[in-house]
Length: 238
Image 1 (cartoon, one colour):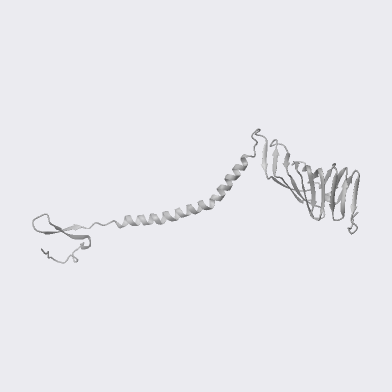
Image 2: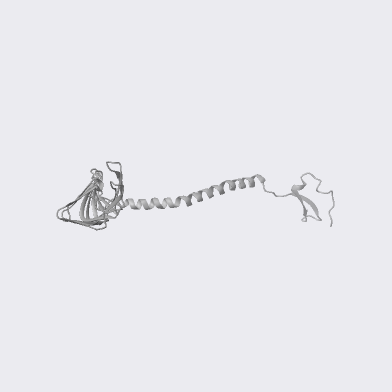
């Protein structure tokens, strides 16, 4: 059977309908039904939402990647801070790798570091140090540093008391070794009453009664029975 009639293209709304054949009735009859379509406004809203959401998600992920190392560092710092308080006494404190810096009476810098610090009370000016090291500026402009097994640093008087394998090095080649010494970090003096020995470009020295250093190394006095051996090719300063 064939169906004839006027062309559908010319009819109004022809783009939204499609022909359908009703075969339930006797014979065949042409029936027009609306064509299903999606609302273009809903699709546009979805596209616009994705355009906003995707860049926002990318920014959040980028920020998380950048911030993660800092969050890890903060976590490590918090773990380190937890060891500052000794378990036996809430007032006793312990710090790893402390670093103290200051200026002497001539506004010259000095630093005191250690592998570990113990403080019995937050109000106490004295700090016990493990393997302390002090960097000092000498009168002639050279740098020196002193190390020891242990020490005590007074933050008020700026005195550094050192005990055990005290070694004093100066970058021009001088070295002094003794069992104990006290350094006035502000005044620039030092002294010790244990036997001392050392060497330098001039030769070697030793003293049974210790030493006294004044004015940041301008003058060093050997105490007790002493001996100084000067190399023949060295220039001695008196």
